[in-house]
Length: 341
Image (cartoon, rainbow, N blue to C red; front, side, top):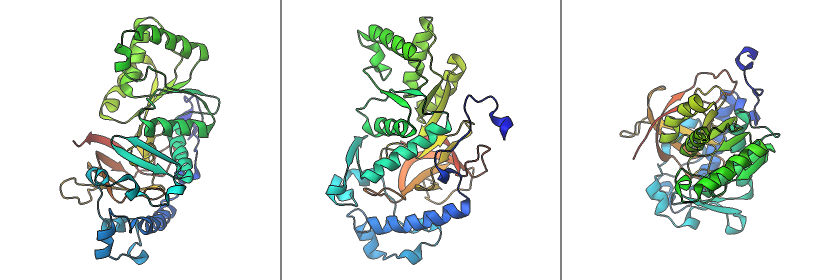
């Protein structure tokens, strides 16, 4: 595969051996962890009535597809519950609680390590190394994503710069933004910052204003969320400003980041299938759609100690692709099509 990577400024490497596990072994892991998840959540108020009417046991879960026997969870379901009603561990085992988009997510200490690992996987896949300097330009007022990215950069051993006041297009429009922007350009240049983690709108605005001032930023790459605007802007950023842009997909109900991320080939986002179970369903009939056809992504936690969810409807419509990726990662990939309202 050397010819595929000869123009890369970094070597194609894997952060976690689970990224290249065989499908047979992966399915065994998924079943084992699915049974453990069901055991964790069956007494929660959210699922208690279902399991009272459907007393499922380990024998009911022989293959990952048996997750279809479980109930769906929606955003409305989460918001109808008190925070502690979703916890699957005692309060003294909770290490952090993060709030974003109206969702409160709890973490044990092991969950925080999992969060760092999940984020490190896609950052490392796209060239972030321990000798890099990365600016985290997501506002820490959105702690789920900002802290997840920070933990991933820390996990790799790269140096990080947490976001300052400038971290969104709106922040560039305040009265004293010009001065702060000039300071930021000087800061990025003097430190020779390698990469930035930010919303695509901010990266686009940052690069366009630098270009208008005749400045060349040292940034080599950007990691952006695969939102509707992110998907639209990533290629204009690459084309107009010479910055390599990689996408990652997350939901605040699941670790803050790390559901999926691109490898350097930019041919779909690799799902983290050892940590989550993914289904692609028709949003109307809730039946599985054939591979390659768009369907709503439904996610079941397989590794979250403090707060596990069953068949959570994400509202994200995507196409699944199980064809082997030349990068060597064995998980399925997704192409996001649209976001349901």
